[in-house]
Image 1 (spheres, rainbow, N blue to C red):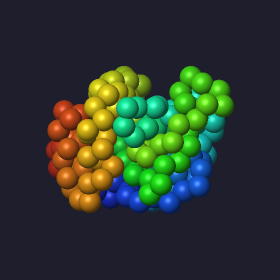
Image 2 (cartoon, rainbow, N blue to C red):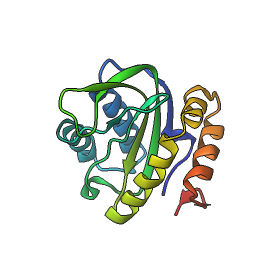
Image 3 (cartoon, helix red, strand yellow):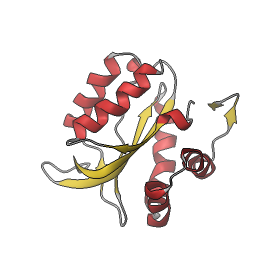
Image 4 (cartoon, one colour):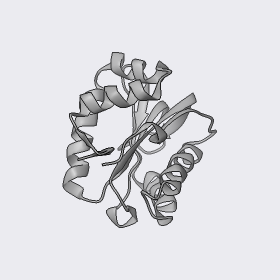
Length: 159
């Protein structure tokens, strides 16, 4: 799985959840990790199946979409300059101000489920979310998440 400093976007300025998602998905597309169809597909999926999650600290969102739009597995982290409202998962019309977006590009459903479960554990620790939100170094964010997600980098890629 790809996860490096180029997939950690800091100080994203967006006025809406869709704008934030398009910035992050566009970055994944520019890197060749997803097909162009991924951008519209992930926006559409977020409208139908919201991914905003209120947490004790900063609210998070985990937008993702179907595997046919993915070239290579990747995770991207977006840190909003100012929180952006995302609709809360399982709620209609209720929003939460999201500071951290974890965008998943997975080509297998079982690996996506496993990654989601690991992320959910991280989301329960507001001190970790606070650390990610305020860390200046992309490398430190990457190293922290790799350690917490218990994944290994091999030749620049995660497995």
